[in-house]
Length: 151
Image 1 (spheres, rainbow, N blue to C red):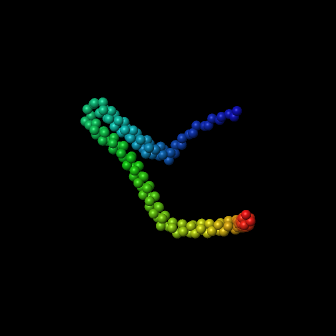
Image 2: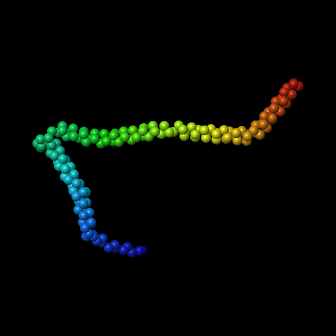
Image 3: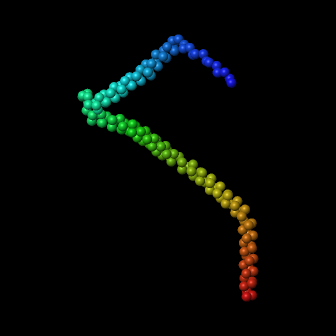
C-alpha cells in the first residue's frame, strides 16, 4: 500500500493585504450575519413571550397580520418574476413573428421544390412496374372478353 504523506500545515501569511482581507470578511460577512441572527432570535423570543401570555404590549393579531405579509411577499416576488418572464417571451415572440414570415416562405418553397423532385423520381421509378401491370391487365381483359364471346 502506498503511504499517505501528511501535508504540512498551511502557514497564514501576515501580509497587510491578508490582514485587511480578514478584517473586511468580518465586517462584510460575519458581522451582518450575527446582527441578523440576533434580530431573528429577538423577534422569535418576543413572539414566544407574547403567545405564552407575558405582557409585551404587542397584540397577537399583529403577529397574524405580520405572518400573512411574510407569506405573501415571496409569492408576490415569484409572481412578479413569472410576469416578467412571460412578458419577455411575449415581446420576443412578437419580434420573431415580424421577421419569421419571410424565412418561413423561403423554407416552404424549398420543401415544395424537394417534394416535387421526390414525386418525379418516385414516378419515374414506379413507371416501368405500372406499365407492365397495366399491359398485363389489358391482356387479361382482352382474353376474358374473347372467351366470353364464345360462351
